Length: 388
Ligand code: NZQ
Ligand code: ZN
Image (cartoon, rainbow, N blue to C red; front, top):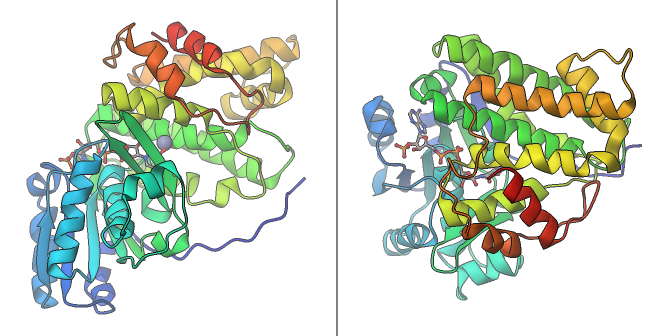
């Protein structure tokens, strides 16, 4: 059954090889000063930085820069951006990069004029945004998070060892996002598969829960199948435009709120990964993969029919001759085989975790109750040990 919902997504998407040609028209809607936010090296290496600067100059913008935004962006880095916004009177924050850069930009947007301590207010206490904000836009260079069309902003407070995830309302979504799949050709296979697993995890978090026989579930199954097929093609040929474009659009659709409509949702895998990331700084998608496999085996008995459907529809596993339980188990086995085939890391040790970290990660993970079974910290510790 579809639960009641209201739907609104304000982000304009410009998708395709010529998508950047829309930037100057979009810039005309904003004031003179643009804060350009980007990562460490990628956009300078592949020439995108020069192209964007040329368009900004042509549009007569004053450009202020925040460079070096790291994967799992830190609160201190975000605060550097807040200072730039206040001292230059920034009119638009333009993020050029992956999810980390875009998340950092949204964090700056809500925090620059916040009179209280922003991390406490927005990432710990989840208070509504009550201060002035600055519009954000993005040019996406790596597919996975969906940050280009949602309100998510995940910021790591290093001293507190908390990777805080917050979903802001539509006013904070990027006003426009430019998606050219060709920009992702230079993303390494490691980062690409990490991004694809992140997309798949977003889909599974919204699939393995509650009310079934829902159109949203059919959409999710299609996006999972497309992610699986296309990552195989892109691993063989990183410059296959069709595969890269499908991977990019799948990622956007997986977390632009459409695939969560009318459903209860789980998100416990993400909660555990966020704390894993706070302790290890691992690539987000890799951490999700490691946790997902033992997590889903653990909750499977409480959602057997859905796991059996996952096996049949997503992995084409025939039902004949199998009990529901065998079928359900075969689906998770197929997920594990797929991870190994794609080079997705599924061991916490390989992701930088130590045995001493596991209880701390388990104790500090937020416990949610949207999935098939609400876990306690001891069960999370068991899961972490299983994927260690
Ligand atoms: O720093 P640079 O040089 O830009 O390199 C980046 C970075 O090292 C590189 N990269 C990006 N585009 C590239 C490229 N390398 C070559 N060519 C390109 N075109 O890739 C590396 C990883 O980038 P990052 O932005 O960290 O990856 P991702 O997009 O996976 O973002 C991960 C962050 O997003 C959060 C994660 O927790 C993590 O902090 N998430 C955000 C969400 C949201 N906003 O809704 C939801 C997600 O579940 C997730 O939690
Ligand atoms: Zn994610």
